Image (cartoon, rainbow, N blue to C red):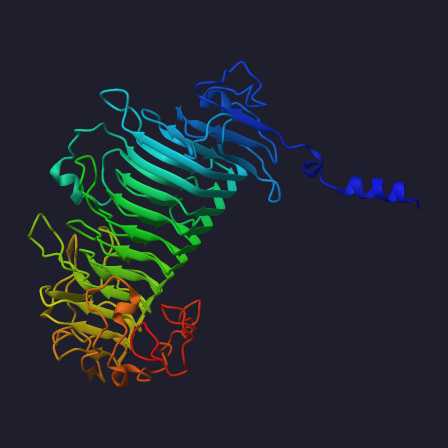
Length: 547
C-alpha cells in the first residue's frame, strides 16, 4: 500500500468534527451590525439576539468585545460541541481598544443573561454578568438568573464549563421592593427571586451531567449563588465539580444541591450567605446545604458569616441524603451552627474541619425562630412524615472553638441511629446547654437512649462542655486546654495546639459503627489533615496533625 493510500485511509477514519474548520464569530454592541457575517471584527454582529441565532459547530468561538456592555440575553440551545473541540464563548480584545475588562452581559428585565439548554461541550469563560431587576414596574418572569443551565424532556446537557465569570447584582425585583416579614420563615422563599447560576433538570427524563463551575465570582444575589435542582428522587444531575469559586452576599444560601449525585465541592469561599443588606433579598441561608443528595464530597472550603433567623449554618446536610462528607473545611461565625444533619440521612460525616464561634444565634432575638446549635442531629424529614433520625453519622477529628461570650447549644433527636463521635477537640469557653431541635416543630426526646453509639476520646476544655442531659455521653472523655496559637483567628494554623503533649498521638483509630458495613465511601482513615500533612496510623486529636 502506498503512503498516499495509507494517508487517505487514515483520513477516512478521522471523525468529521475534526475535519471541519472552526469559525470565530465577533460581537460588538456599538461597532457591530446584525446584517454583518460576524466573521471578523470589521464584520461584527451587534446583538446577543443575533448571536443566539448562530449555529455553532465544534471548535467554533463566539467572541464578545471586551469592556463593552452587551444588553439582553444570550441563548445557546441544542449546540453540539465535542470533548476535544468544545464550543467557546468568551471575551476578545478589540482592535484599537486596550481595555482588559471582560465583556458585560446586562440582562436587566430578561429571564436570564445566559441560557444553556440541551447543549453538549460548551465552555464559557471570562465574562461579566448582571441583571438588576426589571424594566417593568411589575416583573413578569418567575425568576431571573445570571446563568441557567437546563435540559428539556428526554434532553441532555453535558460537558459544560463555566469559568472565570463574574456574576453580580442579580435581582428579580427593582430597588426599593421590600419582602413581606413572613417570607423569610418559608422553606425556600415563596416569591420570585434572582439567582446566580442555576442548573435545573426537573423533568425525570432529562439529564445534566459532567458540569464544571470554576473560579467564578458571585456577589450580591437576591437568593442563592449556585443552585442545582434535579427531578425529585431521580438524581438526574450528576458529576458536577464546583471549584475555587468566591460567593458572597447572597440573600439565600451560597450553594444549594438538590436531587444530585456525584458532586465535588472544593476550595470555595462562601461568605455572608443569608445577607439582608438589601430589602429584596431573602435574608436567610447556610453557606451550603444539600437535600436529597447522594455521594457529595465537600472539602477545603471556607464558610463564614452565614446569617438568618433559621438554618444558616456554615454547611448543613438536610434530609434524604446519603454519603455526604464534609472534610477539611473552615467554618466561622455562622449564626445557625457548625454541624447540622437532618432526618433520613445515611452515612454522612463531618471530619477534620475547624469551627470557630459557630451557632451564636439566640431564638427570639432579632426575629430568630430557631436556636443556633453547634451540633444538631434532627429527625425532621418533612412536615408530612414521622420523625426519623440520621443513620450512621460519623463526627471525628474536628477542632471546635467557641469564645466566652457565646452560649453553646446542642440538640440530638432520640431517633438518631448509629452515631460516632471521637477524637474531636471541644474548646468551649462559655456555657453549654441542651435545647430542643426546632425544625418547624421540636424534636422530642425519647426514652431508652440511642442505638449503636460510639462516643469516646474527645478533648474538652472543661467539664460541662458537653451537656450532661444530652441522650449520649462520652465514655472516655479527656480534659485540658489545647492552648491554641491564636484563638479567634481565621486561619487553620491559628488552631494549632501549643499544648502538644495533650493532643499528639492521643487519638484512636476510628471504627465502623456496629452493623454498618459501609462506613464512608472515601474510607474512614483519612490520608492527611486539614493542612495537607500526612496523618499517622495513630492520629492526634482535632483537625491538625501535631509534628
